[in-house]
Image (cartoon, rainbow, N blue to C red; front, side, top):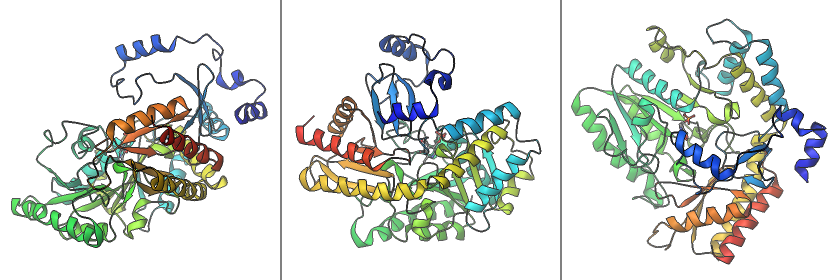
Length: 455
Ligand code: PLP
């Protein structure tokens, strides 16, 4: 197999790479699952009733303890693919040399910050390094509040920005947090997400409709007299499977927020960093430049790493208070991991691959729409795609149970997939950016088989 051939080139014995114990007997999957549920908080949040016990990965494939291979079509953190030897070598070499916190004057920390600034629009040249997307968004909100002297934040409904205090407060997706609608603090003001497929406003006036819906909220904030700290949203509507925002939407919201002294935060944790193929950052698609960018997930390819990128002037609003420092965020190993990910992305042309393979896959999925009424629409671009299932193309009734059943059936055919969206009726297609065209075709073939056969 491709995997076996790759392993034999890399290393005569996989156990050498996997380390001692790799060949030890594995606990029974069901027994380990019971222990997981007994001791691991949040363990129930797994999209499969009986998830496979994964043992290792290689490129876009995962392998379970029984040796079965799966195509990993929904990986949130791996953009290079699994088991990349160059990344593994760079991380271990740096670990042997030095790992410590980012307070130290160490070349790799400065170099990585410089590289992130160089990837960002002009003026966004100051970087805070953290460990995750939640931390990045918490910090971005604190920056907006410190800079403006106001507390109020504008955000979108049906969005997810993280689990930590402030990022959770602006996370309104009921799929991720059913209490989101009732527990939101008074400084959070959520407005309708501009979903061009199933939202309240569609057609040529979509942007105008959603902007009109924001006006009374902004007027309410103005009337309260406490000012507006900022606005946070994903530049592509990620939770619904990567639906682009309506043309002109962000430019107009940004203008209204800035007119009130607020800052505009682009949460690029999920859609940025080359995944969209046609763009490195999601906000490029809207022709805007945010005041603050947040990133995480793929930038460390699974190694905990996140960042906030902003202007020197905005950064100063927290620096002067001396209230920011992360002990582990952006230490030497993290920065070497981050730089190696960028090197490999360039060497292997992964953003280009996301564009080419993504365009091909999107065309294959679009063809399913003609043959299967349940496939309502394909969203997204590059290797961030969503296939939305509906029971009726006129009422757009979400096909939630059917989507779960398709995911289960795909698993039995060797494809890892999960639903997304507030109705959990969208297949979230988010593979590593190294996805080969053959793997994209395998996924499309398996999906077609499931839809042809019924599930
Ligand atoms: N922002 C977005 C858009 C996300 O999708 C996520 C995670 O799913 C986060 C923020 C939070 O990132 P993390 O899980 O690294 O804290």
